[in-house]
Length: 38
Picture 1 (cartoon, rainbow, N blue to C red):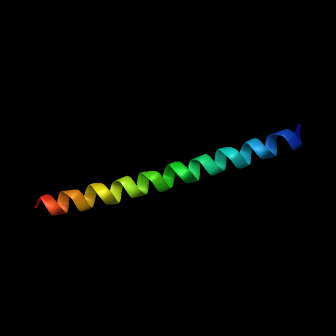
Picture 2 (picture 1 turned 60 degrees about the vertical axis):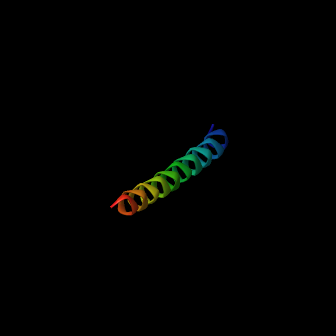
């Protein structure tokens, strides 16, 4: 069971990191767009 759970945990962790990075990028783009609008 443990051998099965490790790959899935790694996959979930990878997805969380990917989502977090995308969220950061979107936040920065949103701030840049707002600052450009004035």
